[in-house]
Image (tube, rainbow, N blue to C red):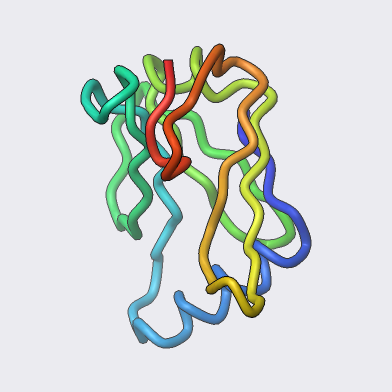
Amino acid sequence: MITLTDTASVKVKELIAQEGQDGLMLRVAVRPGGCSGFSYEMFFDTEKDSEDIVNEAFGVPVVVDPSSLQLLTGATLDYKDGLQGAGFAIDNPNAQKSCGCGQSFS
């Protein structure tokens, strides 16, 4: 399962609070596409399928579908906020190569 750093979990909780909707979960998925073959997708979701895997990281419910789980096992979601910009980044040991934007991998 993908794990969240402390910084990422704080930011996700902040974003969930801004949404003002109960029952939101962070869904992390891998989809075909991007310049390297697969791309990451993250969004808030209120629904989960019976096959989805839910893991709570620092109080944040994280949902992953079974096919994405195979590519995300051991990955870490982090949040950076600095002079170069702010945003989420996934460190994925399963990625053999990634593109320059960091949003696509193979």
